[in-house]
Length: 172
Image 1 (cartoon, rainbow, N blue to C red):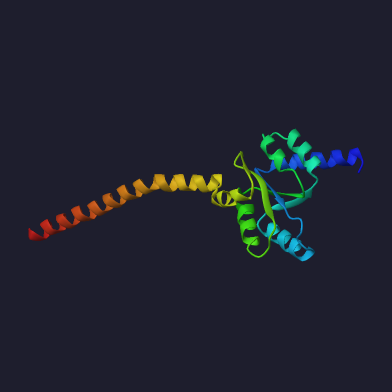
Image 2 (cartoon, rainbow, N blue to C red):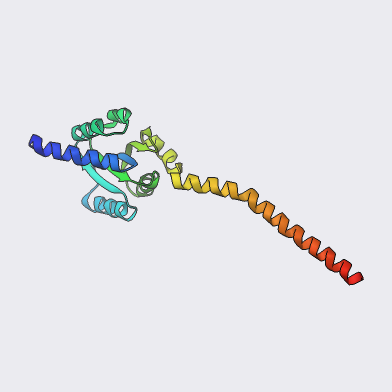
């Protein structure tokens, strides 16, 4: 491969790394063509972009990117595929579900919510990671709960006062 071709690949990878909030490094070596196609279809359905890369080119792209990913360099050994996504836990759920029937993909590392996760043992942690939108929804729900309680009590109290007034009116 010519150095100009490598430079184009590095720049494309850098753009993808910078444009996506999250990415996972996985090993899908050993999957046959049918299983690989099935994995790619699942990735497409869940809006995950799966790219097979050379480690040296990926490392150069990571070095040139705006993100602090130095901890990931140790995972750049053997076969590497990158799963780019806008949802932090989608690839983790996909990997967990897919590995119930297959031995691969194996999680090597992940960059999620500006944090680095290393090793396959972090998969359960990544499945539980909530996206920024999910966290905002939780905060809004927590803030709404006391307001709903107060409004409910005020409406209930209003009905009670109305009932008392009706009763007094009826006695007259």
